[in-house]
Length: 126
Image (tube, rainbow, N blue to C red; front, side, top):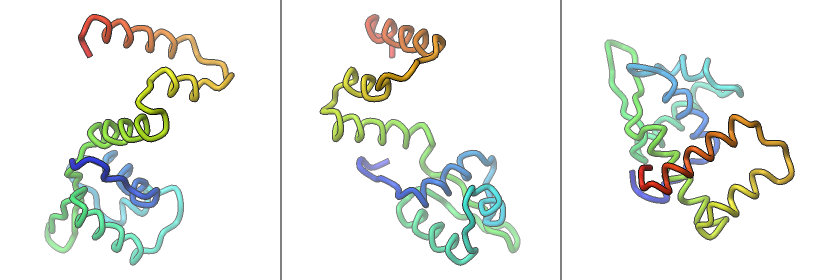
């Protein structure tokens, strides 16, 4: 995936449905999986844009189009995470974590996960 290929919220919502599907997802299944209503023609415009951006592939099976991701959810998360970290927090993980905390209670399980991750990073095993 090329760097800085950010998706607007509407396209990201569609990708979330496609990533959740397996073996390709049809347009009606995408419409059903979206949290907010969308017309079929608007969806097809979004799908076409996502194809042009290199996020989706469309395969015709009989009379039905199936959409599959060309970019994995994990790959997109890594890219977006790096972009947000750099742009908003100057690359500082500690400032990012502090902003997420912002005085709210953090579950003990999450603290344990973060500690385990930090230990892995210390040992050089990401």
